Image (cartoon, rainbow, N blue to C red; front, side):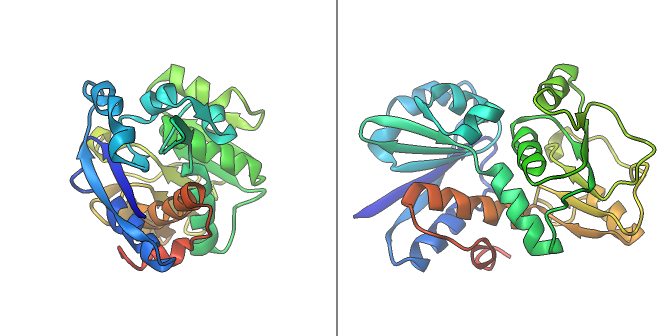
Length: 260
């Protein structure tokens, strides 16, 4: 059996998901391939009408995670909690939806910084589907507090509402141990300074990976913070994705070597 995997989103030409999927398949001795498909919000419905005929599973990226959530007939607890899907599985005539963004970031943080930041104070920039998944997993991991900064008051409130220790404003009296930027690079303002509460002891993660070091991440590196771009999170969420699809264990750090 040759597995048919892929990734959909827009823009998609930069996506490294196919390399990760194929590295994972090779690691466990399975045959198959993975392909990129440019699908935007307008073409999503038409694409999904025949997707199960062409694919066994799909990775879903921006701007389609909410649409994928609405399309999936069977949802995992993680997908349902954040109302966003980044992984689709076609099986027995059904479409299953899952979200591995949160699991991916927590696993990546442990690998990069040797901590899951339990009892720490975190700032998350952005309040979309990826941010909500990350927030959920960080709360489950025991962070002390999270401040969410986003342009949409509605999205920020949606991200904060399920949790008593997640706030839509800065906790200015607390130092920031970790800041995670989930805002798409195309939507960012020019950054000229780091956040209040940041020190050289803080860690900064940018979940984008094109370019490898964003202008935003450079500010934190110049201050002396430990930093990481989105490649590690991408690899670890892909490992979780492959584990869910194929019911086998995959190593995020091993997958990272295929794209680093």
